[in-house]
Length: 253
Image 1 (spheres, rainbow, N blue to C red):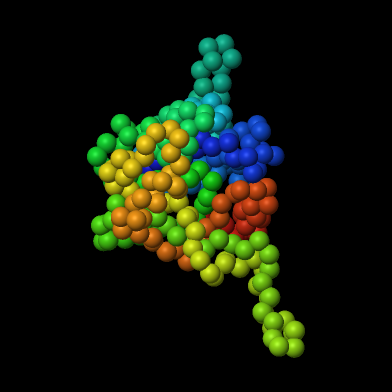
Image 2: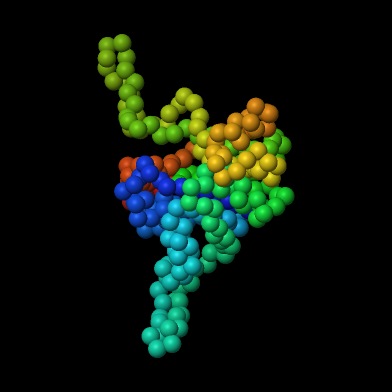
């Protein structure tokens, strides 16, 4: 099953990094977040990736083109430029890097990959969020319910600590940045039937607007509710939180 990762947006809310690199290339523990996302899929057996590129696409292309050099020790002969890696990567991924336009919207980027997707069920997510989700759980759920689109619903982490207070204003429980318990949000990690592409008009189509709204009204959209870990990087604070989890030995994805 093919994995589509939307990796072409401007990432304006985290411009401290995206003025220089595209958002999916923001490093988490020295490795781009998009690579962390690909590892999540790979653990469940999905290794055929299609990256829908746009803003600063060359940065992503150069990283994967030079992947072995950047991620291994090597010997180089300066006379003939021959390179011999000492510890090559054991990742058997197939990565397709496709430019989908600088100003193309999320739906439009997906539509541009139609010829690569073909008539197969496919996986789709954004290039800025990690999770402890088992992708096969979502795939099996999708097959069971036979809807056109399955989206992973998640509870976002709160921005502030939560206090439980009794009638005397005494704090009886304190939770530091718990997951929000009311409401669900779009966490990405979709499973989609190819017919969905017919709901996308052109480059101006926003995936989360008209296409998914119409599918929902047709009763062809279902949510796989994930109560576990999910975290996206919209701000520097989000990135720092992920870094801290790794530093403290509490990586959850």
